[in-house]
Image (cartoon, rainbow, N blue to C red):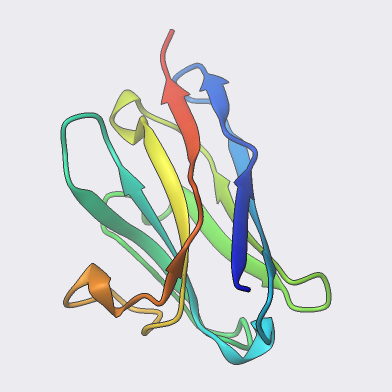
Length: 124
């Protein structure tokens, strides 16, 4: 059974940092591209970032480029999202998603599995 478990969310002040993790199990992690998607209150899901299966290629939404860094440790079956210079607009539930391309998707239905999400709140 595929499982994706996000952690690391919380309350942070504007300008602060957080690192999200996504622990994967039930599939061969290093053969899949992985992505982060977020959903702000009252809005639809928004793709944030993606990484290729080997970790060498990454892609970011314009809204987070230069502030967020996606990475993965295939030996630990874990995906990460380092978030810096956080803004109130970054407040959302953050999900990791398995499969698809590692670039901006045409549709979020391209992803095969989703985690349960972790809440990130940026507020003073």
